[in-house]
Length: 462
Image (cartoon, rainbow, N blue to C red; front, side):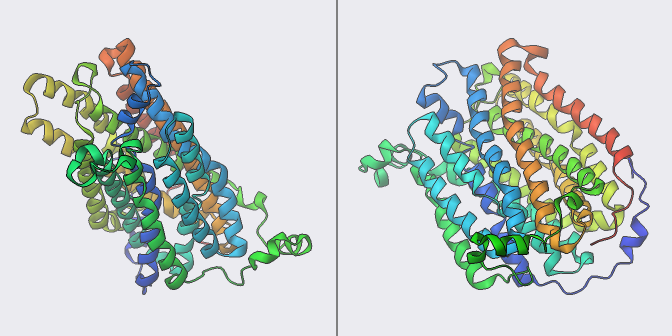
């Protein structure tokens, strides 16, 4: 196997799995659908939404800038709140924070569907992000529910949950936006759906959150031992007393956490750039370097890509990690994704020469298979992050910190990637392909840096 020595393999190969509480794990995996489902539901129609509100004044090359701002606002605001929610969950328990987050996402999704201006769209996405502290909190529950040796199996399921949410989101968004136009027999007589053409897809996430809320309230077990009652949080003396029981923040910000979170953030930056460019590339007219596909077609392609990578992750991650070890899995996942960025210009070249033929779809499928490398890297780095926490009482804070950094790079990533996409097209840098070359070079640098910075073996678990 190329890239990295598998020194970790013998140790992992002898590890014996213990019983996994699947009833609890399945609830957690269901909850993990919420963030990608909510954040990706606008992907198929975001370019058309930007064109419709007229903020670009008809300049097609500027669509990418505003789509990037719309996508980034969610993650930037998530970065503001996620560390707070993780820290709070270490004190009052995981369930109250998760329930509050689900309620906040429901309200913000409805707000987006009722918006008519770019400012309102941005503010609704900000509310959705700042209330979405669940991702870090949920991840901190897994090592509290089961033994460390079971985590690779569960981590292998987590990207499936993410990709399923990222699959369902584009499907719902692509098929339900503008219902009065797409389905005139059913919705054509409803003036409401003509006035608010994006409300129907945005009404689906609150329904999902309502089901998840009930599942958490009745089925999910609290994993924090002796959580502080919420009513005590607002009592100064009690707050000071309970705060002294938590792990000091300076101990959480140790070198292990910084190294692990830094690698996690790097993979997230490259992955979110790919996820941001992909729908924009599909929607951009052929004359401007894209494929010129319709929103329903984009939704289908994104759904198929998400389903494929999720299935690959579920079937192969655990065995790959057991054979290669954490570092080798991380590095080789990045190496495997390297050719993926060049499938964009090749696909555009093919559609220009031969139209929408089978060879074009083969390249799109290859693109999805190569993106499986990100899932391998994510699953491997989770093992490092979990082991980096100074103790189990600080798992929520540690995962909150990691999620905050991920949210920051996901805020920067879409705007940077889409902005660079638009810049490449507008000025025809490298024939409009500068954006793909930049992220290819960044990934190469990351592979080299990881060999020096990431330790060969995962640290002792807390």
